[in-house]
Length: 316
Ligand SMILES: NC(=O)c1ccc[n+]([C@@H]2O[C@H](COP(=O)([O-])OP(=O)(O)OC[C@H]3O[C@@H](n4cnc5c(N)ncnc54)[C@H](OP(=O)(O)O)[C@@H]3O)[C@@H](O)[C@H]2O)c1
Image 1: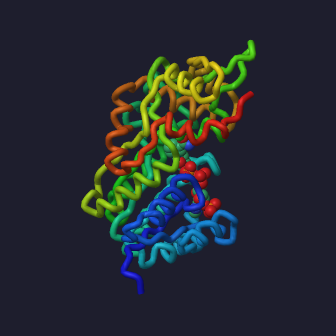
Image 2: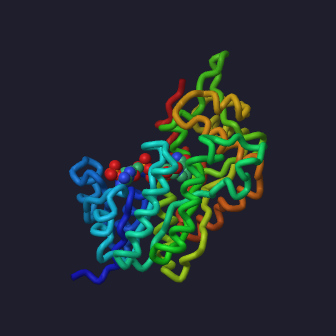
């Protein structure tokens, strides 16, 4: 039997968990092994993880017994929920609760929970600065994750808390990249309220999480807020101009205009940007490139990320 410490990874076929699995498998020290948890062990992504050296097992965050089986024998567990699959903060909280309890039931030594702030702590529901959504949330995809922190603290294995920044991959997959404006020039439109937006290469999130596992359960109870770089709208646009070979200007879209874009979750995302802008430095100090680099010395800057990804950014 291997004496490697096993890290069981929820979301292994996705961006964050996939990064954790790849960080484990490429660590030359061979200290840890990776177990990829997925609802679809036969999917092409799951097969790729198996081919790369991960153990692939079935597990579903809606099914507590399946997660307890999937965590059995694991030293570590990486836990992430996918709000955007269902857009339900209540379901996200239920899934997080299931994961938290399963880590304790399975005897896991160290959990890393990918959380975000419960924005209602800074903006109570009656605070008029940020619109209340669905009667009980300010930023639903943040709030349910943050609410789950108390459940991790009370009912889970010893847990460290990881707070990721805006993925730069949103510029590729989430329609957030530069688009042709009315005069044909490229425009980056984001609602930043004149502030800066911490961002990160998605792959670096998993590497940072792995850095937390390497520190060990001694850092349970600690929070790690990470970013690759913290840039203003004009700084993002200037970087795009350098890498896309065409000038990109920045449009600081009003929050209400963004909320009205109409895609599923536009109100949630609009409130997220407004939350960041109102809190300013108070929010940004919990998204630190220094914290991220200490966990992951290979952390990418936005220029590094663009060097590798500019050709993948849709234009138009
Ligand atoms: N985009 C951003 O800028 C950003 C920034 C910070 C935080 N986040 C948060 O990141 C989260 C998503 O993480 P991601 O980007 O890594 O996701 P992703 O790439 O979209 O992949 C989703 C992963 O979740 C797994 N999954 C979903 N439902 C599951 C369930 N019921 N049981 C077990 N596994 C389940 C999927 O596994 P299978 O399908 O293989 O089962 C898949 O591996 C969201 O909650 C979002 O709020 C996003």
